[in-house]
Length: 88
Image (cartoon, rainbow, N blue to C red; front, side, top):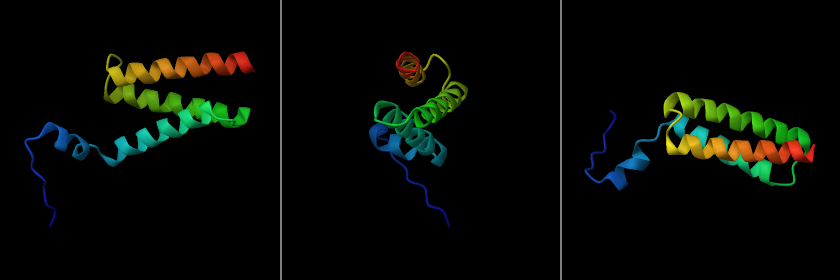
């Protein structure tokens, strides 16, 4: 039988609100940013850009384009694209 955790504390409830998909998307975003910021090969960086683009697409669908987290990832993606195109 599944138990529910009830709380009136927003700070306590926030971590409980995440689904497995949310956690997976956060991990993918972190991995892509780490790859783009590190000493990875061009091929790895292209794949990381693609992963970040896919994650951004999910964020737009789920959170909306105006959400601060979506906008944050959009800015990061644009910066990484500029950096990658300048290095190519």
